[in-house]
Image (cartoon, rainbow, N blue to C red; front, side):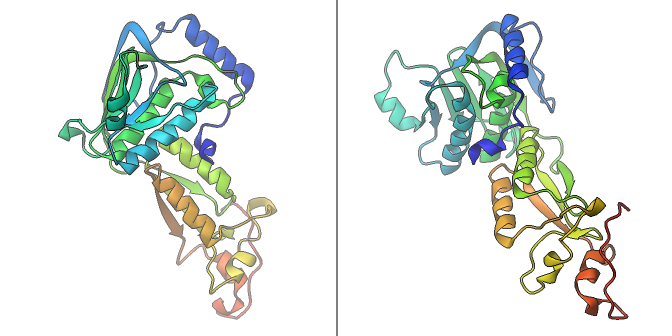
Amino acid sequence: MARSLLLPRLPLVLAVLLTVAAFASPMAAQPALLPAPLEATWDASGVFTVTPETPLLVPDGDLDALRIAAMLVDLLAFGADTRPRVVEARAYTRTTRLDAPPAIVFSGDAPDSLGTEGYVLTITPAQVTLAANAPAGWFYATQTLRQLLPAAVEYAAAFPVPLTVPAGRVVDRPRFGWRGMMLDVSRHFFGPDEVRRVIGLMALHKLNRLHLHLSDDQGWRIEIPGWPRLTEIGGSTAVGGGPGGFYTLEEYATLVQYAAERYVTVVPEIDLPGHTNAALASYPSLNCDGVAPPLYTGTS
């Protein structure tokens, strides 16, 4: 399940070529981050290397940090034979040794000016520190770290490669509180797995609002228990006469939760009072003459 949030898998050959190119000249160009952060400086003196022994240290008892760190491990495990471990900082400190491996550290020590979604990502050969004031900041820091990793980390079948991150410092906070995109599932239905894929890509690029267009003339896409024909009939087709589809209440609730875990808010649209042909075709009594119009599969 966790792997479904990753980028669409690159073809193996492309992933290998990108990785080889990166390691052939690791500091040939500055890393490209999208969206561009508030500040980014890079240190050509070295890289941080992630290994199966790399611990992810989180504040004691912080469930959000534990969850976000576990999501990062799901990504890092693609390039290693075993999974890096997530441990609470206090427990790690009690058992640490002088030869302890470099760590990835979640810290709550960030400037107040960065708000709840900002972060400071500091990378040295000895440690990666993700500093934020709130869980959303930690999450966005992990997405920046994800963009800095070799491209092969996004491909499950790629052979294990060294996972290195260039040394540097990234300071970022969003310019806009509402950073959204719209997915029109009414005209062309996309199933839950496809929507989760979209949410994962949104999170990677730090978008935080998904406008989900659930009804229009071409289709009704969410289950309404008291009005079952809305989906049985109104959700049965799509533009061009495709098979259509709809989300059960359970599927929709799962999508909302999946998005929330990635700091994306789902904004549902039920298109009223116009654009109601799917509803009118489902229930004749909704029409002035009591006659249901045919289903509409056009584009306008």
